[in-house]
Amino acid sequence: MTDAWFPARPECDWPQLVDDIRTWGREFGFQDIGVADTELSQAEERLQRWLALGRHGAMAYMERHGSARSRPAELVPGTIRVITARMNYWPPAAMAPGAVLGDPQRAYVARYALGRDYHKVLRARLARLVDRIKVEVGDFGYRVFTDSAPVLEVALAAKSGLGWRGKHTLLLTRKLGSYFFLGEIYTDLPLPPTPPVADHCGTCSACIDACPTGAIVAPFELDARRCISYLTIELPGSIPEDLRPQIGNRVYGCDDCQLACPWNRFAQAAAEHDFRAVRNGLDQATLVDLFAWTEDEFNARMAGSPIRRIGYERWSRNLAVGLGNAPRSDAVITALQRRAEDASPLVREHVAWALGGHSVGT
Image 1 (cartoon, rainbow, N blue to C red):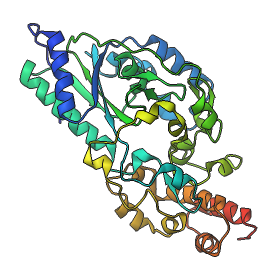
Image 2 (tube, helix red, strand yellow; image 1 turned 180 degrees about the vertical axis):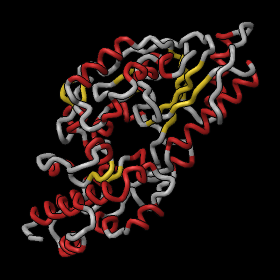
Image 3 (cartoon, rainbow, N blue to C red; image 1 turned 120 degrees about the vertical axis):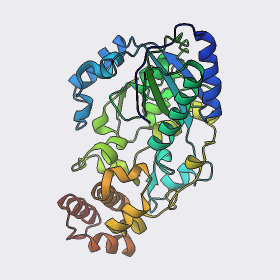
Image 4 (cartoon, one colour; image 1 turned 135 degrees about the vertical axis):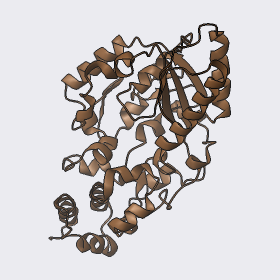
């Protein structure tokens, strides 16, 4: 799809169009659609404070683009509204998270990454929604995003009433919890915004208490430098040694704050087939088996998966930490020793740490 900009038709019944867009969105697999205006001054202030405290860690991209992240019209000129969308991803057939986390020989992969890469799925569905809107109003200005540009997704989703920002900083809903992806359509259509919903976290601190590394430093405040999702996905280099034991067997992302949230009692399984299916047995694979993959195997098995973007080196680094935290066994020691002279200095470092923890020298 080619993003394009055209004058919007002035004669449209805009409130009716919003209702129609929400209906079409559900037909295309989204659980809800909202509309936000572009005033994000409070979110911008919160972002600037977060950056000033250095809580973004090595995510330098969070500092790029200046204010375009919080001012949609600076990112995409002509934007006056943002159509927001969310789609469930909970995989119903996957091994229970507690069973995987409770077995230190298995590798825990965040539930959202067990299926197909969500970027492609959501962009395709949003593109279909754009095409359907065009049938009604003709050409209009738009640009589609799914975690692919400097967009304050949670702030926009909350502003449009898709949920509220939970204390873990993720979007929450009373009916569906937080296991969903977000996507946006920046547009020049003068759609009436949909109203926000109230915060229903109350005095609950379950997500804060559940974080293995204490990354949720206060309600609604996350220090990414301590977050396991950041450490296993975004961080390009060495994982701080003091945090490695807390990572346990989590090798790609972390769901602990969501698993602890009472609202996720109401989470519903994904309707989208690409998210329902578990690929490569990643819901119950062992650390030893995954660590034995070659780079070619990794690239082939992870084709079409969001995991592939971190690359074989980081994947191996994460698995080495998991093996260092696993109970000592001949299989664990053998797996680590086979890669003690790995071509990657990063992997060698983490293998050496893991072997040291098992009192085995390299």
